Image (cartoon, rainbow, N blue to C red; front, side, top):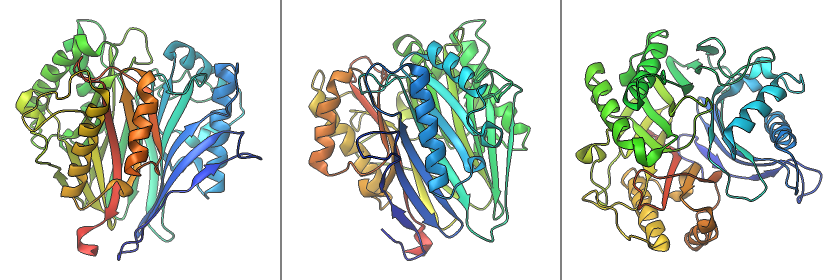
Amino acid sequence: MTGSDGLDLRRPMKKLARAVSVGPQVHIARVTSPDSIQLFLACRPEPGPGRSLSAQLRSLYRGIFGCLKAEGARPVEVVAEKLFFRDIAEGRDAMASLRTSGEFPWGEYGPASIAIEEPPSIDGENCWAQLHVFIPAAGRDARWWSFGSEGGAGNGHQPPFEKATGKALSIDGKAHYWIGNLLGRPEGGFYSEALGMFEAGAALLATQGVKFGSVARTWIYLREMERDYGELNRARRAFFERQGVGRRPASTGIGGAPVLPANQTSMSLYAIVGPADLATMHTPTLNEAHEYGSDFSRGMSVEEGGRRTLYISGTASVDEEGRTVHLDDFDAQVERMLLNIEMLLENDRATFRDMVSAITYLKDLRDAPKFLAALERRGITDFPHSIVKAEVCRPELLCEMEGIAVVPARNGD
């Protein structure tokens, strides 16, 4: 699809292998707009039975770095990374070993990175990744830098994921900020930890002269979703009130064990400062989440650089009054979830064809074939998409989906 302002969306499937049936697998959405080329990647390791996690992780990054080279991107242009592990303790150890191996160019890499325990939907595959790559157009005044706590995502001499990492890009008078692996102190109970996690995000943004009100999107993971989601909402609301945050970011709050065993929750975020138009997204099929105590927007539209990027919050089978609908009926819950997302997109003049990235969270991975069949019926399979196991915010909800779509800016229509 090409917009009148030069926005171009292409979604080729890239198989970085000598044969289609083997090798690391990377599904790419490539978005070309006036100021940049952006790549959205969903990555899987080389398939094969009985391969160790270390071998799979090495295969995963062989695919990532090979894909970057094939697409004309540099490692420094990777701004955000999310790693899904079947077992987070094993994943952290394997990642630490890989980073000390000298096999890959970690020194230039350094995205805002987060790793969580959310098992991939394909048996035998123990690690997946999603990446966002931001390549400034030729002739643009652009600068990258990293910031964050010492330790961070790790390099050849530091353990990975001990503290938060930030990646920033300044381009055409705007500054984009991504932060991964925000953690609070686990002492004092969940509420204190969650509040500390938000405060850590605000403090890290403040080192860049940025207020939390500039945050457009958050992703929040809870080790014990059903137990702690209420306390998360209480801590988030208290934090927003203290910070004077009026426009609530788009957000996903989902089950997922943090990388450090003592922590019960972790977070990543995206903020933007400069000439950009941010607006909350709405749909008549959903009420506003803050009406039932969850302080997030259903979605956030960010218009800048000749495009609108639509950040769809985690969305489930909820109706216009905030009630869970279709109890114990997975197929019907999927249809309502997809309807809600479809209407969010439609209200911003977009469709599923404009999606460039998605993650679907299933309470039971045995439902994955039925979910994929539902997508096939709608013809909405052609974008980078990861399906993982996670507990959803209500015990009766069986699935949740988040996504990113990109369309031409309104003034370019």
